Image 1: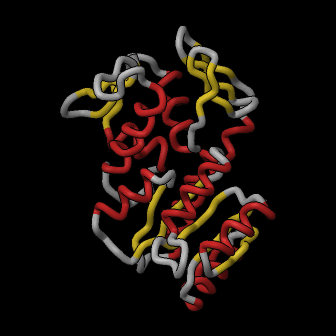
Image 2: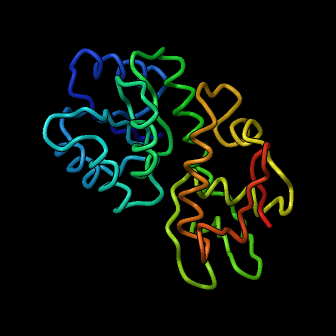
Length: 224
């Protein structure tokens, strides 16, 4: 059973989320502060964390960063009442895999969680992809660059898995959204660009002049 940590300080919204997730058969841990979220994360090891950005005390961005520093495999979705791009990008740059703007439809929330769950649970696939530079191991869900371990989030891992299975193939942003986030994803392609920028910062020798993850201008990206 997928275990989900929900951190939301508004009681009505937190209960609403919990009820809808439990109806889908998820095991839900609900808390209202960032500090409680970190404690619950350490004790109960959820598969996915659903974090409101605007929290009293430690905000959701800080919680996301601390969780990501502890575990590269956990899925993280940010909740925000703001629609500005800067909040979405900040969430992704602090280690989140996805974001959802309040108010949201519960159906959309479930779709986002199921999409992320597929990335999180992909660790059970017994497979190894390897080339001269990188090695992706599904058995241990680890990623290596020239033998050195590199921590990747579930979304980053899924993107590299797709790229390494399809070297030299150019993927449009829409294709990447459909394959990684799912055809029911409602959002813009900026989430692709932020994740690619994050991957390059971890994997490229010179992220400003990427050698392996190339931009295909006017289309999307390709792994070379």
